[in-house]
Length: 238
Picture (spheres, rainbow, N blue to C red):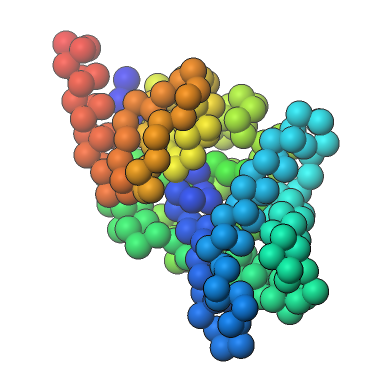
């Protein structure tokens, strides 16, 4: 059974989660923020993820945009910037329109030419995802955008990964799941997907039960991996 579907995580995989803070830091009058934006952005992301996991354990689903705002409040307060509401609102606006990584559009375009279904599966809310897909210019290359809003729980809950087979009417082994998050890769692998970890920062492999099937530094390796997988499966079926 060959790979027919590519499912991409959104944040950190297709969209650069640091682009909002980076762009804001370059704007006039941001001298204080410009010196600490990398640390603020990192803490913002860390709290965004940890809040989503904790709320899942507590069975208290909260819209990911609200989580994103709460995580930003925490990060700004940590660096003495909680009183700057204009900065907060600017960062949120930019986060709703995150930049896609440089290679994203060409990779998705090439996959579409090969008749591979391209979909997004994300913890992001529908509003966030639709905004980012539109503003980044990749809408024409994405067949389906799936948000956890529909199941009201966050990855790595198996219910989230089940959305792929339910929405795209495919089998697990027809899916290559692609994410820059090791915990997401582990969740997808445990569900039964072929997985590809986009390790942009050269991080160690997470010490979790399920490891990635493939590792790459960016998305340009996706098409060759699909060809590799499909060739191997074709030989096995002879």
